[in-house]
Image (cartoon, rainbow, N blue to C red):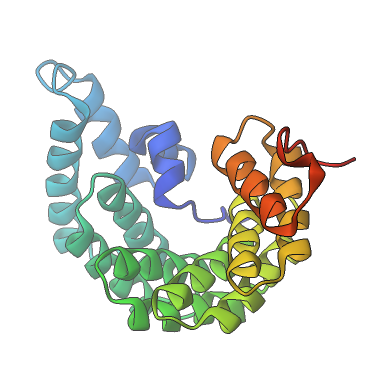
Length: 230
């Protein structure tokens, strides 16, 4: 059974060493494990340990010629979590050179490109991720975000709809649908989406205020409280 690749957000939650050890990549895991335990290295902060580990990984790669797309992918997520976007992009591309059908690498490369302002390039990789894994809700969602940044709002609405179809609890997609509907004058649809956000996150102040304002635009008597209807 193969392990499904994790994104940079997963690395931030569990830490690069724990993640890669769990993935069963012996050489990479060994480097990270030893750097965390050997005297001198255990005293380093997380970013220093990652720098040292990356240097050792590069050396091992040159010597052993891994050729594993997933090894490159996981190291890219470590670098992305550290904010080293250019290096992360390089490794995501290398992973895709080895395995063009690695959907998670397309998705993560799309995120890195979007963050660096290359929205058009990001869109292509999000579409590739969706082609390979149509149920990847976050790929639909971030594709929608990239399209919004380029002013392609109708296409973005379709992406957000696909995201909530795949994951009905996707707060970001519901919230963005609410914003898009409100901007286009579809106030009843906007209210429905914002109410869904508040069902999922009752303490979301932005959604609560947006719902209050949208109901005010509709002349709704329930403006003052703006609680989601049941």
